[in-house]
Each structure stands twice: as C-alpha cells, then as structure tokens.
Length: 217
Image 1 (tube, rainbow, N blue to C red):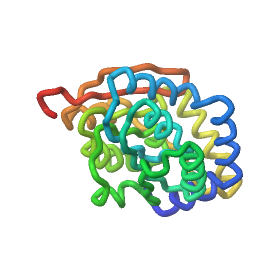
Image 2: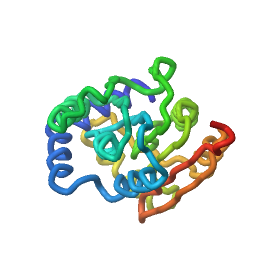
Image 3: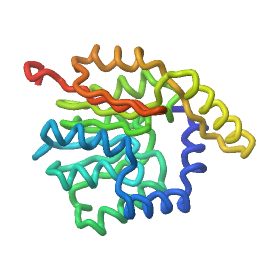
C-alpha cells in the first residue's frame, strides 16, 4: 500500500467516522458479512486458538472471537482512529490484556508479526492496490484458517467503486478502493497450502474461509 493510500485511510476513517461505526456496532452487532465470517470460523472450532486480525477496524472480529474462546488476538491497523476506539471497546469489555495492537501498513510490518492460528482480512483487500503483496504476506501467517471478505469482481461492483473513487477524488481524499480478480486471490491462497472450506456472497461482497489440511499443520 503506497503512502498516499495510508494517508487516505487516516483521512477517510476519522475519529467521528469510526465512533459512529462503533455506536452502530454496540447497538446492532457486526455487519452482515462480518457476522457470516465470524459464524463460519466459529463453526470450525476456535477454542484456545490465536487470531491475527489485519485491518481490524472497530475490532468486531476480535471481540466476537475472544468471546467465542479465542485465547489471544493481534490487531494490525493503519488507522489511528480505529485503534483508539477498538482499544476503548476492549477495555470496556475487559479483554484489553488479550489483544496486541500494531499501528501501520501490515505489508511493511509483516516480518515483525507472529503467525496465528486464524488470520482475517475483513474488507481489507479492497483497500490495497498491491493485492499480491498483501495476500502473500498475510496467508503465510495463518496456521489453520484464513478468512477474507472482499468485493466480487463483477461489472456492477467495478462501476460502483469507480463512482465512489470519483467522488472521493472530488473531495480531495487520497483513499481509493480496488476490485481484485477473485481467481488471482484464490490461486495465491491455495498455492500456500489452503483449501476453500466456506464460500458465501452478497450482491457486492464475497466471504471466504480457507482451511489448511490437517496433514500440513
């Protein structure tokens, strides 16, 4: 992710933006695709496992998975505002001692981040222009499961994100969204020893969980 995109993340995901998102989460719980991802992972058994949540946002996956039995979580987040509110929510829930926080671009920090049983990227792949580096450097950190939510590469999603990016440019925001080829993402993950074990899609998003075969653990 280039430096302009990092700056764009800080601009777009401001303190007021993320506090509104946290308030919605406290009222309604995780959004639909995040719920689907969490449910799919929980059904595979998470008791005593560790989690690496890349681009964790307000921390919905971390909080829900810790409640489900995950032992420890690491949150790598490029937005300082998101880190502020997820720390606040972790303290409120009494789980702050079970989460490690890292601020910055995951690709730059990857060599310093320890592997985890579960790695998640919820609506994060679309924030990166260099999908190969992001997926390639994150999938190797997963020992058991790799869960992602990212846009479908359909014409209507591409048009929608192009319009969104146009208006972001008018507002002089440096953040942009990207649609990466599904086949390319899937090929990169499976080349690293994973098999797709869950798939569901909405009009815009696809939710995928990959599992590493037991013989490879």
